[in-house]
Image (cartoon, rainbow, N blue to C red; front, side, top):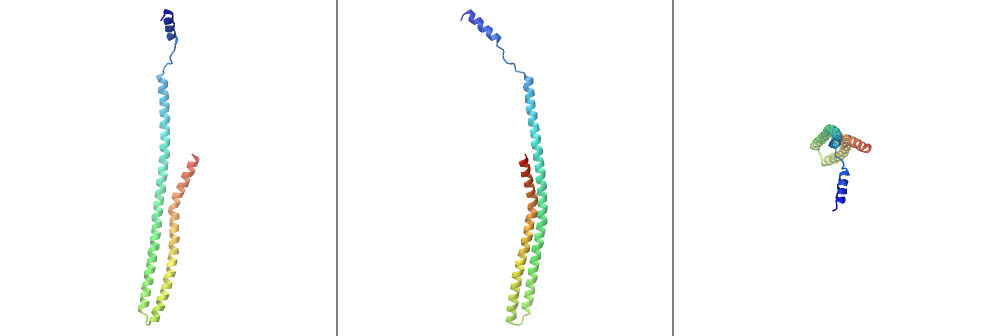
Length: 155
């Protein structure tokens, strides 16, 4: 290599500037990034906490409603069982007092007709109570779901 070429290469190397690395700028950028991440995490936590609290309220409401409704259904079932037992005992007393076979047949026929009518009426009452129970129990859950869907569309 000639002296001129070596000198030119040395001058070129001295004239080249390398970008300087400023650690304070990098630290500021990292800090800003970290702060933004923390802020986003706080927002996500707040939304999660709010959602969990709302869900807890809905579950408590649903539980209380289910408890009340199950009490109503239980009372309706007890009333039906009581009415059936009273009808059976009344029929048994009437059969014991019957004097002829035709009277027994007549009592039995009337009893069966009344029992079918009573069973149909009790089924209607249970259907009404059960329908109301389902509506009452599902109402808070349905409202919460609709609110969640509305919030999801808004977001």
